[in-house]
Image 1 (cartoon, protein in one colour):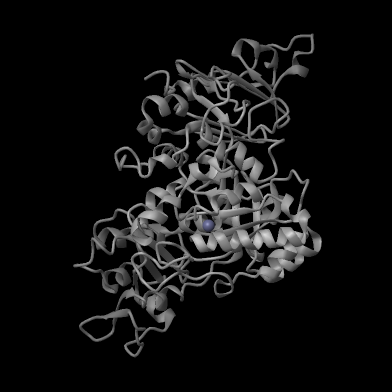
Image 2 (tube, protein in one colour; image 1 turned 120 degrees about the vertical axis):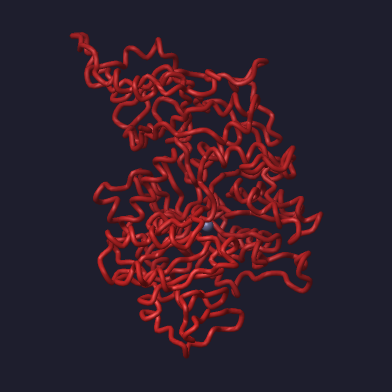
Amino acid sequence: MQVTRAAGTFLLAAILSGCGGEVGDDGGARAGADLLLINGRVYTFNWGDPAGDGTLVHDAPHGEHGWRPDGSAVAVRSGTIVFVGATRDAEEYRGAGTRVVDLAGATVIPGLVDSHTHVFGLGALLDQVDLVGIDTEEEAVARVAERAKSVPKGSWIVGRGWDEGAWANRYPDKVLLSEAVPDHPVFLASLHTFAGWANQMALDAAGITADTEAPAGGEIRLGADGEPNGLFLNRAVPLISDAVPSPPRETVARQVVAALGRMAQDGYVTVHEAGLDAREMDILEELEASDRLPVRVYAMLSLRDEDLMRQWIAKGPERDSDTMLVTRAVKAYYDGALGSRGARLLYDYADRPGQRGVSGDEYGFNEALTEQAMQKGFQVAIHAIGDAGNRESLDILERIFTRHPQTAMNRHRIEHAQVVHPDDIPRFGELGVIASMEPPHAMEDKAWAEDRLGPERILGAYAWRSLRAAGSPLTFNSDNPGSDHDIFYGLHSAITRQDKQHEPEGGWFAEQAVNIDEAIRAYTSWSAYAAFREDETGILAPGRWADITVIDIDPFVLAEQDPGAILDGRVLMTVVGGKVVYERQ
Ligand SMILES: [Zn+2]
C-alpha cells in the first residue's frame, strides 16, 4: 500500500539530492538550511492533547477520511527547526550548503524518547555472544570459538540465550567447549538464566572443584569422572556467574556508546537512563565532554549510591542545561517485581496465599535521602509495581509535599505504576505525578499477571486509559534490555493490547488501550514534559530542537486501517539536534 509505506527509493533520493543548487546573490546562502526534508508525511503534533478518554481535539489533523499529515517538509538550521510546512513552500530554505533529502513519502514524527532505559545493561548484552535461537551444542561452541579469535587470551567470554527448556534432555557440558576454547574462561547463561554452562578455564577461575557444594535449590552437574562437568542449574548458577569480573572502564564506555548508537539506529533521540551509579555517571560525563554521545541522555541518579547522591545534593540538579547529558532526576526503588512475587500488594498474591511481596526499608528505600533530594529540587522517579507499592509511594510523596510544598512542582514520576488500586488512580493526577509505563510489559506479563492478581485487581493493572482518564500525565518507555525497545512493538502494544503474534484477539483488557495520537505523544511530547523539555522539543515546530525521527510506515493511517502492520515498520533516519545520527543504508 503506497500511502503507508515509503518505497526503497528513500536512499537513492537522498543521494541524488545531496548536491545543492546555485547560490543566488539575494542571500539564498544565508537563508539556506543545513538539512531540508521534503516530500514526507509530516505529523507535527503541533495540535492539542487528546482528552483523557482519548477524544481528539478539534484541530487534530483527523477528518472523515481519517488521519492526514499536517506537513510535508521540515527545514533545520544550526540544530533548530526553522520551518515546517508544505514542500512547495520549503524552497526558500534550499541553499548551497543544504542537504536536501527527498523522503519519497516516508513519515516524519518528533524524535522518539525512550523514557526508561538501562543502556549500560543493553551495552553489556550487545557485547555478549548471542546464542538465542541456536539449536545445538556444536553451533554454540563454534560461535564462542569465533569470538575467541578477537578477544585477548585469558579474558572472559560471556554468552547468553541457549534454551535450557529445549535443551533439557541433552544439556551441554564442558568437554567440547574446553577443547574449542582452551585459553579463555567462558560462561554461557541460558535464555531464562536458570542454567549456566562453563568451560574448564572458567571452573578453575571460579575455584569450582569436586568438593564445591551446591546451595539448596541448585545443582552442580558432575561428569563420569566425578568432577564438575561445567553445567550449573538453578541456584547453583551464581557460583559460576559471580566469578565473571566486571569489565574495565574502557570496555564499559565502549559498550554504552554502542548501546546509545543502537538506540539512535532504532529511532530514539533521547533516553531517560533509570538509575546510574558513580562509575556510570563518570563514564557518561566523559563521553559528553568528548562529544561521543550520539543521543541525548536524561540521567536519573541511583538513590542506592549514597555517596553519589550526597555529591549531587550538594551541587543541586542541572535545571537549565541544554547539553547532551542532563542530570536532574533521581531513581528510587520501592518494591520488587510482579512475576517473581516481589511487588508489594495490599492483599495476598492470588496464587500464593500469605505472600504480599517486599517494599520500603526491606527493599532498600531511603525516605530521608529521597526527601533531601526533593528539597534540593530533584525530580524523583520511584520504582513501584504492586498496588501497595504504588499507594505507599504516593503517600510518601504526599507527605513530603505537605512538609515542603515547593517539592510538588518537580513532576515526580512513578516508574511502572503497574498495579494501582482504584482509590489511588485519581491521586496521580491530583498530585501531578507522572505514570511512567511500558506498553511491552503488559504484553509480556499477560500470560501470568491475572494469576498473580486475580480477576479484580487485574483491572487496575497496566491501566493506561484509567490513569489518563483520571488526569495523570503519562510517559511510555521500554525498560530495556528487559523488554524490546522497538518502537513499532511499543506503539502496537499501546494501541492494540496485542502481542507480536497479534494475540489475544480483540486485545488483552483492550479498554486500557490508548489511541495512536496518545501513544506517539507518550514517546515524544509527553516524555519531553517528563524531562521538563516541553518548550524545547516534543513537537515539530520552528524554534524547537531539530530532534526528528523518520519511519517507513504511517502509523496513523495503519492504526485505523491495519494496526497489525505497524509491527513491520522500520526506522529510516534519526536526527538529534540537527545532526543525522542514523540513516538506513
Ligand atoms: Zn528499569
